Length: 261
Ligand code: CAA
Image 1: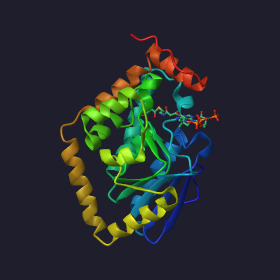
Image 2: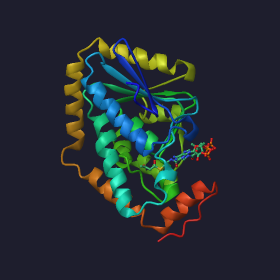
Image 3: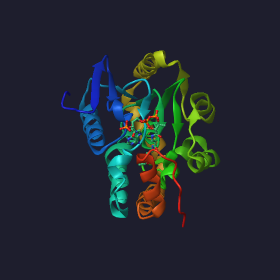
Image 4: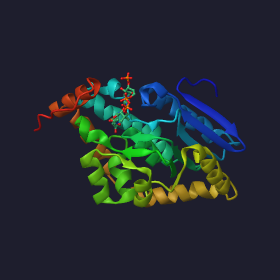
């Protein structure tokens, strides 16, 4: 599994550790990284030795700081819709529906698409320095990788909308009190804590866990059109002046001045 440019995979005792590795960009999700994530999960699905997957970010600063803003800043509505749709299908739904447990070890910033990636995992452990948020409205966008659906599922509608409207980050203890993460540990102990959790899962039937994942997801998704609405609305944002101002301001490292409707 050494064909990856932005992903490191280490396999040990039934656990596959997947490290997202674009540290200079705070592991922001560009097209290649998403495509590599898709390939890695497809390989691990077939890999009989792998029972549990741990997903983390390289470096001590970030899990993932979001989708790569510089990559999509010039997109139009159609390209925006396509970006969200492809992300849902190839990575976020794939992880949520993955038949083996996936643990996100959130080791720093998990923002936008980064928090959405952590939320598509089955459980989350955060380091005590982790900070989580959905800052998309500060860019004139909405969360486009499932955040409008998975955040309210995990923490309830009121808190989810407050996080989306304010675009603010919450710290690890707050995330724990919201139920957004299952556990918080000192950063130095994060991977060990994730491995301990993985080993506790591995004492039980991974096949049964696959069926549990399928059943839990079915209860949440049955009849839901929310993901489709999110994909379309995410694309619509790309046609707005607010989106142009929001992404330009990020790239120019200044505060946005949104023109509004
Ligand atoms: N996309 C592209 N590049 C990013 C990035 C992102 N999401 N996040 C950080 N980077 C880059 C920065 O541009 C910077 O690169 P340069 O050195 O070339 O300028 C580098 O990573 C380091 O970042 P900062 O200098 O900004 O580091 P900081 O410590 O001052 O701030 C931060 C850290 C608060 C995480 C800040 O980087 C930040 O706010 N990042 C953007 C977070 C964000 O808005 N995420 C949502 C993206 S939109 C999305 O995800 C849409 C979706 O739902 C599909």
